[in-house]
Length: 134
Image 1 (spheres, rainbow, N blue to C red):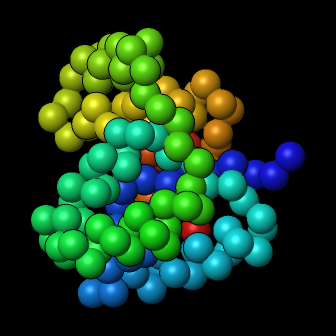
Image 2: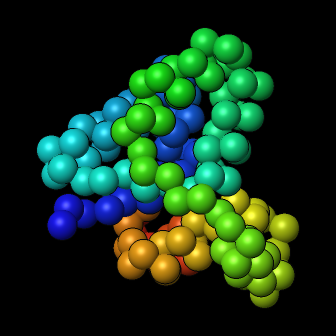
């Protein structure tokens, strides 16, 4: 079974947007993942957040690039009611404004699937016990 790596909105945006400060690193890391034959996993919440961010900052061309070029490479874990409630529990337990429901949904899915590595530029993943790719 190939390595599974969670991909977060921060990595998706950096990969797609050439003027993002982390774009070069995102391209390099995507190459590393391809060489390893890693499977990219994300949540449906990350996709919603990514489409909204790309749409606001880049526009329709960015949405098309995400949908046509990157999304087909990513396996999506859909957030159902149970996962949503578990993510909300984590968010409330964290007691901080800096964490999002989207991030907590990722932590829940990583625990559920045994994913240990995140492709993200958001340190919340590291603080949640995941190894950041890089």
